[in-house]
Image 1 (cartoon, rainbow, N blue to C red):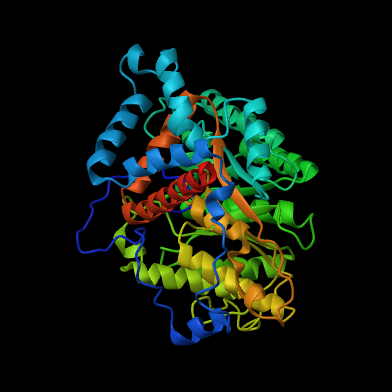
Image 2 (tube, helix red, strand yellow; image 1 turned 180 degrees about the vertical axis):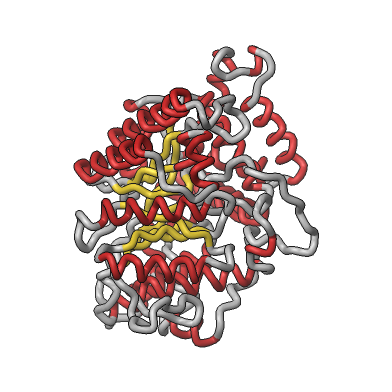
Length: 478
């Protein structure tokens, strides 16, 4: 699982059977090299002391029950495919009866089940209420995105039709500005450049610069975000458009981050399942060093496994894990290593300033990153790297809540340890009407077809929490 949202394929690609899916959760530990593994842990125990109370105890009972119901479906090979078919029908209804925008009973059913699990609300009041509830649990904030999209293949707009293209861009701009306005200080707002429509898609595929109208709109979003102390991050997409997205992102990183010395306002998303990611990231780091701003890095595993050319992706899941963990180590220590090698002969050891979001549902990677962060803090290092963790709302709650508990690691076992900072944990969620969010919800379900094992672990965690509450209620009653 990752925090990037899949979209319909820009082009049809075959799916060879010789590759092992890199997004599936495995019980096998990451195959990092010995030197990387040793330096990553730095003496912090790999099996930290668990807290006496369940981290999931902070969740309301309604959330536990809803999560358990949805996870039970998502982790079932029998139930998942029919559920995806049902969601696909609702996302592309052929009758008014199956249209959530026209059938109030269906709308109510969806809104109070799967919609409520993953989404923030349909308006500012509901969104603010959701953000406040998330923060009340101890989260630092949210990564908020606008669900409405101009999907590839679903628009009749001609890219050459300037007026129609401007309308699509304006629709995206209005929704994004509204999202920035809804976000609270310190929150993130997720941007998807292809949401601007077919003209933007064409420009990105051709790796062309944004049009003056697009550029003006994006800068307007940047200016509002800076004024409200809200940060922006751009979602990664398919490789057919990703090089263009990266060029645009570096342009606006310089525009935003140069105005906030020592802090990144604008972030790019890097997908660890791509073999090219370490090289791409190293190049961007040197660009930020040369141009004098802090690079914003959101690291995910990747979400386009079914549509990307297989030669671009690591052949084994363990290689993706090694890439992810190795890059995290380099970023948090600000030292190049065997995975992330410098793109500059002049600066071969130390990374330039960087802010990092570790966006993953992989428990091992989160634990390793947290352990490394504690180890660095004990040595009085690492505080110059602003670090955040992020998981999707409604998913991997057992990981998010354990982060909120601090994993009860080294500081609880080593008297010499200094108090560690509280991890900055965020939840990624979208807002929009139930109708607008159906495509997002469909992609969440499709994503789980590649992560049944991980979803099963989350289901078991929720079962354990429900049993714990039942035992506690029984003891209290006696």
